[in-house]
Amino acid sequence: TRKLQLLHFGLFLGIYLAALLGNGLILTTVSCDHHLHTPMYFFLLNLALLDLGTITTTVPKAMANSLWDTKTISYSRCTAQVFLLVFLIGGEYLLLIVMAYDRYVAICKPLLYGTLINGKTCVNMAAAAWGSGFLNSL
Image 1 (cartoon, rainbow, N blue to C red):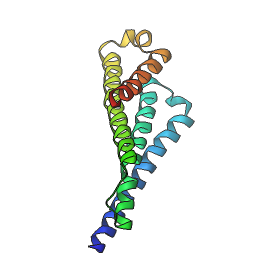
Image 2 (image 1 turned 90 degrees about the vertical axis):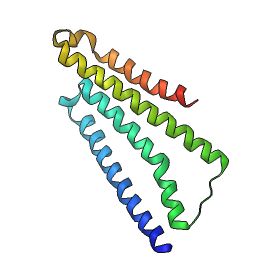
Image 3 (image 1 turned 60 degrees about the vertical axis):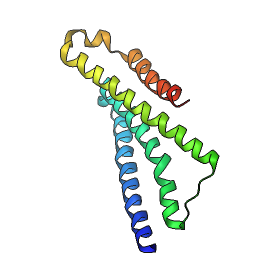
């Protein structure tokens, strides 16, 4: 019914705006505060970017379908949506693995942390997570 469609739209709009606000705050805080330029926050910044992409890939189309009472999607848009969703979710999972490794090194090998995890290593691991997610989606 139309009331349920509008309820669905409102619910997803609230979830979408909360995700945008939360991830936007993370991005802004980490970018602006120089004390947070550490490996853990660098990975958290990447995770927030991937999460923003993930939620932006699916939720707006669901909201539009509810608002305009449509149920169709073109083949090219469906393909693009599936590609982006698999890419971004795969990247998120791989980035969580990288973050787990970062915490493992920080806890179990604290004296070697500065040697094992430096700026170049962080960029390489984040790029590997993004790249692997992209290759997986292909």
